[in-house]
Length: 412
Image (tube, rainbow, N blue to C red):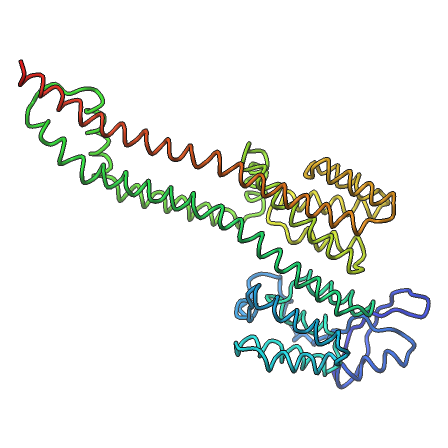
């Protein structure tokens, strides 16, 4: 008979852990309730074969092949479940109806799988944890809080809004990066073609003249010869450097140093800092308003960040809050957030309206990120255009100078 590990609350509200034998999770949950406990989490413990070591948490093919779902599809499904649950329909029936409405067979299979686990006795949050690439820690933590508080429909509606906001934020980052990257690639390709194909044919006429050439023309000929002879090697070298950098970023120490440098850069640092703080503020706001404990909300919020330095600082802030320090003072010590956000959170702590102040702070951080993105683009794009113009001007002047000398010689 399978053995299950459980976490439950007793009548006094204290958390207890233990094991119980049962033929199914549903019966295990019923047995725990008969013991006068409120089950919070139930996990089956699998016996380990002798000599087999537990997994070290590295790469797993099972995790790699787990199904995924786009943010837009997840948002739609979340709203559908929220609507059905708010109409007093049982969660099993709600999941069945949503699965039947899914046009994508893979999405329908995911929702059906969640429903199957719920029918076996798992809570909705525990059932969703079986699909970590679809429902992350933030999602499952909020669903668990909604189930405990009895406001699952409201929590799901907030989750849908949050998913839309996250998608919008991701879209702004992508939009901000696509244009500069494409412009840089096009400029590099055009200049490379000019130096390797066009310029050699033009300056070849000047070389046959065996006349003294201006310094700019000589420099252009040398650069053109270098690109023509070593262009492929240059491209291979750049590719090797990029690959080596990506491999090095797999090592925590190197990644930490790189992310630390990101935060100190003049423009990129502001963008990276505002992106991570905006994501953190939005996540913490939605978790706290959904009755997720503050410490747990801070932990989940820090896990959503992309910068490991910022993540470490905010984990330290969570420990300070656990030790009794105020939220605003703990976040202020990280030196990541704007004074306005710190002041708003401090005001919310004093007035007892932390939920509303966190929501306003999230909006403030999101606006700060948008301003920094606009500033970065307004600086980078003109610099890139001016650099392209300078290179093209150099090529044109280097070609025109010998032509002007030839015209002068012919005129004389």
